Image 1 (spheres, helix red, strand yellow):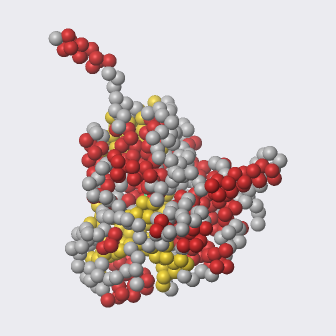
Image 2: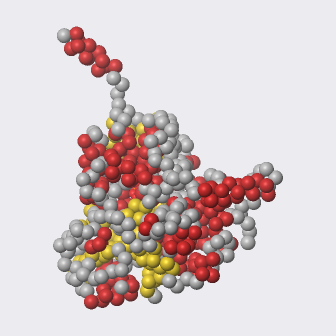
Image 3: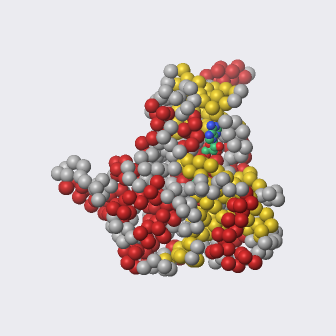
Amino acid sequence: MIIAWLAPAFALQTPPRKKVVVVGAGWAGLSTAWTLSKNNVDVTLVDAAARPGGVVRDGFTTRGGRPAEAGQHGFWEEYFNIYKLLYEELKLEDDPLTGYAEQGQYSPQGLEAIWPVYRDKQIKLPTGLAQARYTRFLKLSPLDLATAAPLVAAFSEFLSDDDAWKRYDELSFRDLCTKLGVSRKLYREAFEPMILTGLFAPGEQCSAAAALGMAYFFVLKSQTAFDVRWCRGNIGDLIFAPWCEKLRERGVTLQFDTRIEGVELDGDTVTAVKAAGETIPCDDIVFAVGMRALKGLAKSPALASRDEFRKFGNLRGTDVLATRLFFDRDVETPYSANACWGFDDKVGQTWFDLKKLHSPRLDSEPGAVVEVDYYHAGSLLGLSDAELEAKARRDLETMVPAFKSAELVDAAVVRLPEAVNWYFPGSYQSCPATESESLRNAYFAGDVVRDLGHGSWSQEKAYVSGIAAANKVLGRSRLDGVEPLRPDEPHVAAGAAAAKALRRVLSFGGDGPSLASVPW
Ligand SMILES: Cc1cc2nc3c(=O)[nH]c(=O)nc-3n(C[C@H](O)[C@H](O)[C@H](O)COP(=O)(O)OP(=O)(O)OC[C@H]3O[C@@H](n4cnc5c(N)ncnc54)[C@H](O)[C@@H]3O)c2cc1C
């Protein structure tokens, strides 16, 4: 009786749940919603697209109606936070990822390099030495490879302090390589393809800071840094669908096909987000969208006059093209995952044997299934689907002539104009910080965020940035609950400390000269 009498009183005292709108349901937005939903927050996750996943979403089809996706998705050694999500939090029944396998690198002249499974090498070597010793470059001379040595000094300086990012962001990766005497052949055949496939733009149009940061995380952090696992099927089915189901179970509202066009403000406070014909009130907002979308949102009337948002007008995305080819018979391929260079000027390229990577999911297909993707693909997007299918097939035949004996029976062409963030020189200062600089209750997430302080890239960075944005909404420190990267290996840490000390000495205590700013 007393309990019945007290219950309404307690109910009255329960503070209303904070209402947070998260804009964008890619890795970053899903991660923000996931973290907030563990903490009694009323979350609405909205996305302009029909399905979750952002730039890596599925939901595309071949002309024959088979499912297709926006590319193939790799998970590198230190994706610790995504691994924690997949294996400890979502507890998926089937492992959504493949094991590790050797990878190939091709040009129109054939096989150029083989990346082994570095963890399988018996003798563990210090990073740098391990990649030099175990990577098999078939056509690069030791002399060419030796010209990479001065880059070690740039890495040491880059890793020495946070300000180094700003210094190295001012010049392009190609200019840095030219300054440091990297041979043309090494640059063209090893570094340029790496930048085109890792950062989706050519080296002369990529920030040297972004290139060094990306290469360190994906390749040089340790002997095993470049070992990669791939999604074993459609990423939408294997990861995003079960994740969204769990989000719904936790009470998150997921709203697709809803493009946010602007916000309503009360002074410096966002009170609601606006979509066509709809206004969604909020206490806080998290923008988990990429550069192209930020640029668009910055033009909306309530935001356009704010310096922070005006800077987003400088940002841009780069074009991606994904093709999926279905053949009438199986074709033996040497490596399941491959990068390529030299087919089209300033275009990056990868291809994957999906029968192998998605096994056994595509076993019922009569023949080979191959994904051929192009990055910084603006020069290709205007071609017709038939022309692109023919081109992808031609490129494949040049690398693996056995494809000439197979007939193409079905194909998908997925165009993603300006879809991926473009880290051009000088872009850093226009990127958002986790907490808005001009709005009291707005936050940013995504691989576009400049102050994450974690060191990861791509999907892992987007995922971690979502946790960081949620932490800020909850009043916690940015990287609360985030798995850190492993510490730098001792010789790398010593190099960074020495670079810092040397700059001090050369400048008599202040900031000394930087390799990034020497004029030659
Ligand atoms: C072909 C391809 C291959 C890739 N391969 C890899 C890989 O192998 N490994 C790896 O780690 N990374 C890879 N990446 C990069 C990785 O996918 C991205 O770093 C990551 O997905 C970015 O996630 P995000 O959540 O920050 O942004 P996004 O994925 O861009 O998500 C932003 C979301 O916001 C939505 N949105 C935009 N504007 C609005 C609006 N106004 N209103 C509502 N919604 C809006 C969009 O629809 C989108 O869903 C690849 C990318 C591509 C395109």
